[in-house]
Length: 196
Image (cartoon, rainbow, N blue to C red):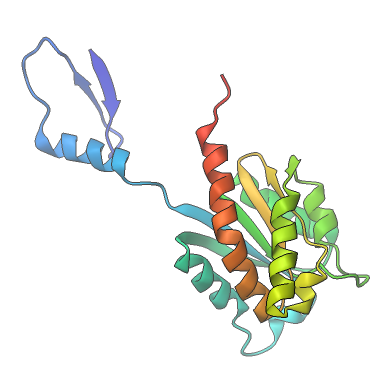
């Protein structure tokens, strides 16, 4: 006898000896559940004291569209001040919420209010320096100076990948294009290994 949970939350018992076959609706639901890959979920964190408050700023929409082009579902865009504790709280909220990617924008320079890498480091379990190196290299190639000189980091917290990007439009466009396949690889690794 086997019990399986359907998509509606109902449990159906299959008994190999009762001779009855499961109904077609049940079989299709199970097949769909097993064949449909879960969509990769992300949140975007806009870090800055005033940067994203100007009228006509559409950074939030632009990033959501860019991530959507790579198959990410953006659960939300959060604006936070350049304060280490606030940045950390927002990142932790994404991790606890079970998103696959927390993408921060801003606060990666050398100014006195640039604290995103320090806040991110407090949440990270494992650093993944190769992703940050790829972002800087790609940023230099495309002429995004703030990406090339960024102090942004990348790492894993639980089963969530956290990436810091510089805030210019060029750095964001290039950064998302660079990060998307790398993060997909990391998420695949995180989802394929289980603790036994």
